Image (tube, rainbow, N blue to C red; front, top):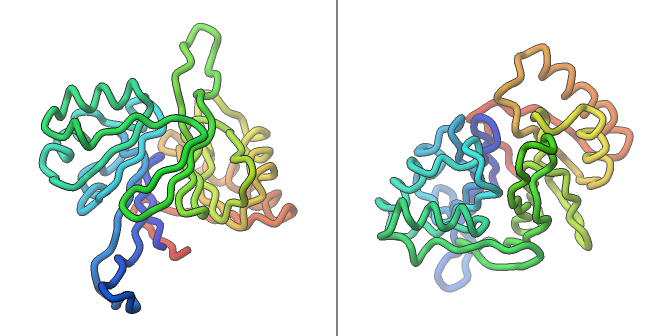
Length: 232
């Protein structure tokens, strides 16, 4: 599986499509594409090009640009979306022609999307302030390998995580909580998300702690630039 990071919280996963007859996938052959959280800071159209599945963690615009995502849903005959109920309603209203391909995601469930096994965890966005309403937030574990928590520090229970996507900077977190999240999940590797508001100095500071303390607990943390890909 290949993971490509886009600006802020958006990632694209792709893997070879199965070959008829059960043979080995060919290099350069068709690939299955799943995208998580194409928001207003992200390269939405590029990330969704050729995608068959879209997962949205929650309703904030930096995680789902409803108008741009709806435009892609309207143009693609195959793209299916899963999102918390309120986001699903917004997408159906904006892309009525794709309404039957837009599904409400619930916590603690499992489903298949574009050939990927998806498990859901958590139910609420992390607290920003008592005067800021808390919205629904679903974390997604894809193929038992990649966990995207959205805007939360939900630890997926009853499973091991290979690759953790870490919200490095947000109005709702601090460095100590970021590091504690990495320690709690104990993934083999971790990469940053939710970092569009950090400058280079801030990135170096936060990721330095994540890398140093992650190493102590067996998690190899590495930086990814927007557009950079890694093979998992």
